[in-house]
Image (cartoon, rainbow, N blue to C red; front, side):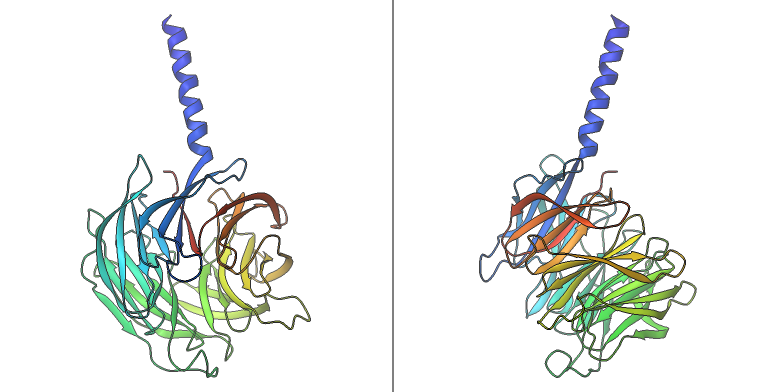
Length: 376
């Protein structure tokens, strides 16, 4: 009897582990104003075997919680409130039983129109990019997950060649180096990726030498990411419809351009702008979104050179893809369609990187951002 009970317990544990591994919580940031407005932050569950998403449920009501980031410990979530006035960042505790979010507190973002939020590799600070005011800030995280008063701030100055979009600075994203020593702010208004020394313990950022990496005039750098091994980095340029690849020197934080490649088909003459860029967990592929052409551009990454080779454009059921994300297993790509109020799921071909429609889709009003709660 004891042996039977032991075997039954083992089988039960294995079954639970399988279910646990196949169910991956997902959170969605949205816009809560305008056409088909949402109510705040939504949650769902991705089946990492089938690619199916559960029906979305409201996790927390909030005003324009466009971009989100989840703490490395998996217990807290942070969201910007995107608006033209003085911005805020909100801290939430993730309720383990329901997945709902409990508001802990709010702090000023340090500028207007906060549009991107990130967390340093040690999980000690929230970093924010303010689009409208062209600034970035650092806000320490307390032990209970709430936010302290901001401790770091930089204000960008300058302009570039596009009179409609580049009259002044527009910080569009903020990312941290793999070794946690540098912060990179892609500024659409300046055509620069600004490079800052990051002091995680003090919660400060300061000018680096070199202070920035330039992209082509009028390119409009938007989002930035590192390759899987940290030797290369990539920025997607919203206005030009291109991706710029850089070689990265971790000792100095230097970015050196090695390639710029279009995200659009040859001969395309319509209006389109880029949004998100992601590297596959394997490090073999890079993806970028086109709004207007309404597609995800897929590239193969040369592991020795860091350069990109075009693979395909995937357009099935894609409409104004503001953001997309790849689940931690690398099996699926979820695309947030701001133009059709939906999130669609694609299976990723592990050999080529190509996206294959699964037919799985959920409806969410004006989705902007997708974040996965990784299982520890």
